[in-house]
Length: 266
Image (cartoon, rainbow, N blue to C red; front, side, top):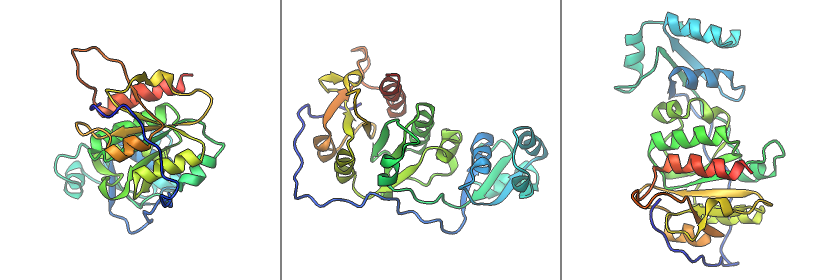
């Protein structure tokens, strides 16, 4: 991760609090998921409204073997691969399977933090915009039991397409919470009892030293830029992943996987 200030500052009690809830609505369809795992996970998610499914015969047979519900199988349009090609962006690797879906219902940060169903960390993405990286982070979040992934509303690509394929179905199991202001969301997490650890290459302490007796939020910055100054300042501490001096930094999705493993293996 990029170099960031080592010293953390306090937070002003007079700073207005953000309403940390999801703003995305379950609006018209037009979101396309493609790839076998992404589509199969969507079909298995009772919260996901599916408008239509395009599948080749082989892909439909795969869905049947994977245990897709009969109600979802009825939505399948059995067509040729080139028809799916025309429905999707150029170069989409769809594996013979695509689904047009509606957004998932919004989830609030308060509800996620209060839930007893999950005890893992919350992952906060500070201006990470690359869909491949975001998808890979969702995949790691699912693998290591994260409660949710918080993203910046206006700067995050839709949870579909390349992002959803890279997530391999994880967007169906890990809640995504879009917020307006990341710095204020960190304050909200702290009010909910979370220790907010910002990942930064020049931090003095290792991610392994994060508290073990309280819930943790892992704050990740964009590759190159790292955490923004105000976001870093609002964290309880900056932590690092010790790596060999010959390598300056790790890809942000790789760093997320390592940090989440370290935080949850305890």
